[in-house]
Length: 439
Image (cartoon, rainbow, N blue to C red; front, side):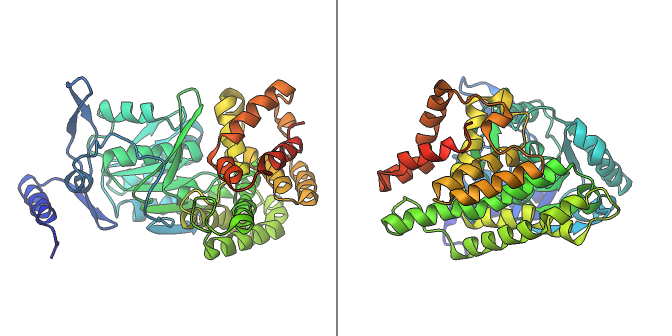
């Protein structure tokens, strides 16, 4: 049945312990999770407490330290989430979904999202009989902060993690769910990013400097989009998410052009999926035709059809493209500019959303791709919607010394290394494209 006696033994042993100890169990996406606090050995050899561990991960891959967050690669393709709902007043009905996965949820939020949705979600869960509690996190998605929560017993007894907020909180919730060995439910309070629908998380230092992107082995168990909340989000966040989603098409074009110049696959990655390219084309056209109406309808009664579509494109559509692209082939210069801002100038970059910085990077990407006229049109549209179209408008330095640091950073990224290896003219195009936004 198993083809390997080790797996058979692990299977039998797992169920024996479940039967004898009556540990709480949640079955989701074919894996078994338990919530018994465990301990691990620190490098010095002493015992330290950590949160619950996935028995599946421990038994099937005992060499993996459960407290280690995943590396920046994942061999499997993960598309979206297990369950998805997008409705008005969905927060009131969130126990219908969350309690499928556990009875002791941990609702993770920051001060803003707690007031918008976190407390309401917790109250709804308690009203349904769940032993829900809230964890308010005011920092970045930081590995050390996630480990501190686990080591302090903050994940003890948790059988489902509910991330409620923006991108930083949702990514931090993914780290906590990973450490707890528990399923994750996401409740985004804006559509400024697609992370509610992906299995990756951008991780930072406690000061906000970008460190790496973690690719988790499990996708969110459910994503719940309450349109009553998203219809009241600030216009800046709706626009930022729209541009982040529209960037997928332009960045995929970067890889397509690179492969066309050198032969498919010469960039060192698999050729972009035709499906991902087709979806990104649709997202770009759909948002382009509806974003004005969506922005105009914010805060006026219920969500308009245009708003519904833009939110869906920004979260679900962009998330699917990310999954099909393996979380990397939909990323090129526009996103590298974001990572550069978070790396070189973390304090200043923290003032802006992911999508606001990617939007400026999209102007640069258009120029690099050989379409300066599209860059000019995009810059005009960004300013029309109240967003910046250059790094100078965001307050980043554009003096020669600043440009030198940025150029060195971008040339050192995987994106530009692949381009330079395949085409000697890539550095010249990069410098030309930087001139369009560093002013």
